[in-house]
Image (cartoon, rainbow, N blue to C red; front, side, top):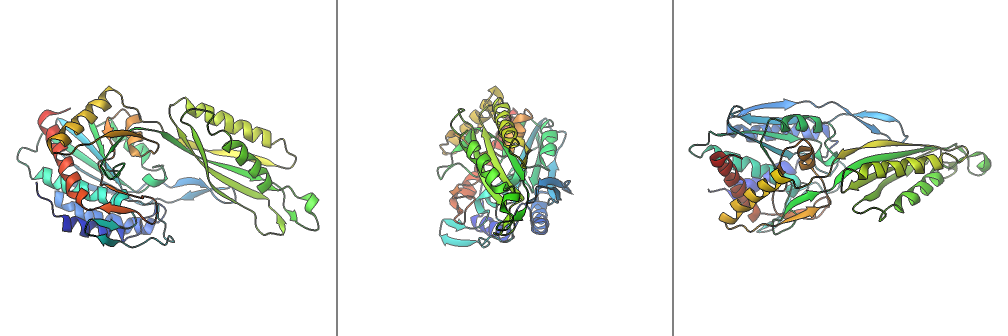
Length: 392
């Protein structure tokens, strides 16, 4: 199997130079057009799908509707005996105003840029592997479906239900998040996650003349945040991270509004009730303060991914294929989550870190190791060939 590394780098550079932050709908539309053209070489069926708007609590504590970018779907041989669902995402964590916008070649083997590893590199691996597989004689027992969503970095709120539905039509899932480290390690067990917002309303007043008439929403929120932070360490594997706080209008006004956004991570399904019970108790206690009204909103977006019998069987298959290619891979747990959690919750065994090797994702130093492009494309092609020959 021969792969043109230069062509792969060219594609990734082209795609990553288009800002595709999760909320940049115009950028996502532009990128989806480029991806549709690139994947047309597979001579498969395809569709550009619209996702419904999502609700998000704004800075004033009000529910607002936010549009999402388009989702791409490609498929071939729907009636084949073995069905594989491949999943990737086109969005990144870098918004339209983020300073990190341009791809640069740092060395012969290092490409630096927004989303080059997470996961424009993974999309390139998918394209090259499917193209190589389709050129193999006898590639007829395996049908595949590829979904490229625009909202993975924000928890797949729009595409998640579709992924769950499509999982039921497949035997195996392959996802192309970046490898866990430069050695190519695969993620095994993954934590679950939830996104919550705590909205506090007080009463505005002049900070000098009528200070005593005001009710400070920021002060009340500060108490809430301290109590939430103290929950960390009380339950094994559970973390509650206060990621964003906003509030107030001007320094001489007692703030009427304040909001905190919280990322929570779970180890087992039962953690969800523990988290929600504690958050609701903190809210109830805060609401005993005269003139303060606080509320909790949000959901658990992804459940923990565990390695059951079917999942372990798939990982064993992948490790065996890699071994025969001379690639020695390991598996380790991850505190992060991805669409692999969604597919696992739907009952579909999947390996979700078949993307490129690199590092420093979600930062302005994100980089890709170029030699991993052909390596991971070769691995994915061989996995598809094994499934085509032996089934699952």
